[in-house]
Length: 384
Image 1 (cartoon, rainbow, N blue to C red):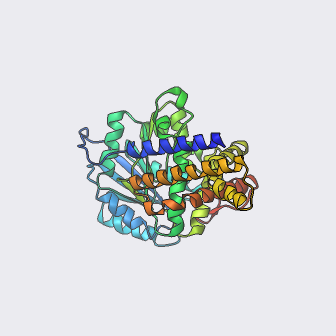
Image 2 (cartoon, one colour; image 1 turned 60 degrees about the vertical axis):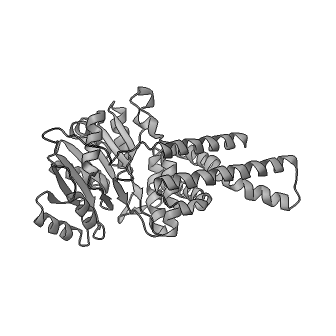
Image 3 (cartoon, rainbow, N blue to C red; image 1 turned 45 degrees about the vertical axis):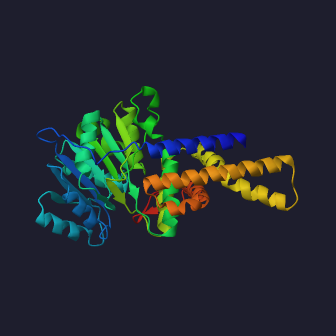
């Protein structure tokens, strides 16, 4: 238990350091771009996104960057997605609509859509964004400036998650913390060979050099993998190129899910693939998640019940006191981090519930993939 307490305390310290010294793409600095600025091809895969695609396109067309195109791949939508994009394209020549082709068994949907967008792109840089995002007017200029000035081949941004319902505010920040603990930003961004085992990307925003994308095989090389964003980062990092994974909470906003069922399905489809599609590794990761992400929250209620029942041995008292201190540290850290990252700090007290929910989502993901249960996403069974 002392090892758990020490590890959790260390993770809290690292979270605080991360929050106070945000490794981020800044919007408040002057940007100097080469002349001419490189053409950026913004590629958006869209399947039944009639409620979000308009806001996304509007934010992109208001960018201050001088040279970019927006390619929307309509992935066989059954709603008004294509019609909305066509309206934008009719009024702005920077927007193009690509009608997605039928999906073959060799591909998964999103990678297939992105690949089709790449085939239509003219830019020397590709920016992959999701239809449920919207962007600061300096998003493109600040991001490409960061890549050029730091000689970065691929940049992915951690977004500001817009949460409206109770379960969103409980689970989304907890998932975010688990992602950042699994892939520490300093390790992901390091150029040292020893750190090539650390990689991370979030599909809402991936900016990559065309030459690097083509040299590594791009989405064609990861066509059957569910977490195409993380797999692309892995491909690029292990090929010896430089990736940066940074906070983009000022530049990038997203509202991913609304209902609890969407949150459950959405993250369940990602956890097991994010653990390498490896049963042994996923089992180990679930065990570690339980030890360091769930067990600390169970210590106080369990030992408290034992004390109430009259079991008052020195060991039980010690565990109870240790658990109380741990709760104080975790709650305080959660509040400060959520405040710094604008992640609904008044919900800091729900961190035990968030941790337990992340644990169950991870277990459900492992179970579903390992036993080939149906995992539906965008109307497709990912295990078929």
